[in-house]
Image (tube, rainbow, N blue to C red; front, side, top):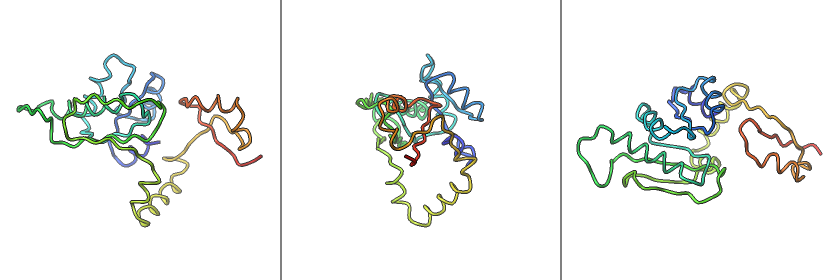
Length: 189
């Protein structure tokens, strides 16, 4: 969905995936920049994509591990790629990682090779909407309503009722958080 939004708005998005099938899926949808974190050339590929797009903001759905660190380090490498004068403090360009997911609930590891101009924050949509003001939020909601079957379309592979969501079998299935395995919780008993 983020890829569709960015394509519609003309924003170059660097997509990071973990599997070849996810890479193919995004490329088939028209994604220009897709890098595979399971590739031996992941860091080089990510740095190249960041250099081409000029990206300095990331959104990390994984949470734990070192993905945000890798992204920040690749941002710094892309920014300083052609710098002629070395600074022990790194570049002056502010790099930001927003963590919005928790697919990995372990510790967040930061290997600090990205200078001193950076930030890592949590991101919750409801908090962000609260800071935007009524006019902007109404406009955003209107866009979602107008594009609900296109840009913001979702598909679900399974539906479970509120009662079924508590069954161990259901929890085991939707708890995998797998690509292409989205569950819709319906209010019916």
